[in-house]
Length: 336
Image (cartoon, rainbow, N blue to C red):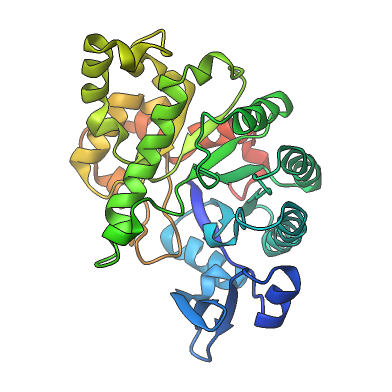
């Protein structure tokens, strides 16, 4: 059973449709050769391929790669956290409905995470409730809202609500820091993205937020948790030796790895070894970032070829962890 928990979707929005929802909402220009371009107004944002918007092409990719079930989430460029809350709520609702329509082509192979207007707690909770009742299996959120990080009071309240209603959460880095210093060579993705993810995890740990969050909350950080696993020893050392690090964090930072999950998108065997040793094999789930070119190009090969993983660990990473995390049963999938 192979479940890909981290893949992306972008609806086939024309410029006019996007503008009707929000003046800043990206749109999709589709070309005759099954490629396309995500656009911001008249500016090119990102080249893309048909599986991003075409569910038939997506399922064909799943067949080619041997993936049984894929959980899709909207491209983070669609979050709209900078917009008027009511406008962002309307956009989220529309995108969530389009995401379910995308999955309706094959509901045994495709499930969806919703998005919410995270800049407004009430509207975010309302849309989450509606989306979960409509058939979404969880929610994807960005790792910050402007200058408000994961320890922000309203964001903690949203996570509390997720835990209360049983909505799993995928936290995805976006709107990366220090853009002015990382404007070449895709450094926002190569450096900024891992740093954003580690920053979010540490805000939850060091602020003591996990003491306020229910243990029922299912929380996963994308892209292998960023730089968290590699630098966790540095954080533990600082906690032991500086009171300003441990002032709000009652336990050793590494003791909180049982409160969240990561995906497996780390691209290299030694990195996967460290991640699994840090988190435990029961806390890592297979992800690909499909169909983006910075995702896994041969999905699942890293896990399949890893000499340090036994059959039980491979099964956990590939599927059993994800089925439990998203409250799914084998009968919900093509494997049935």
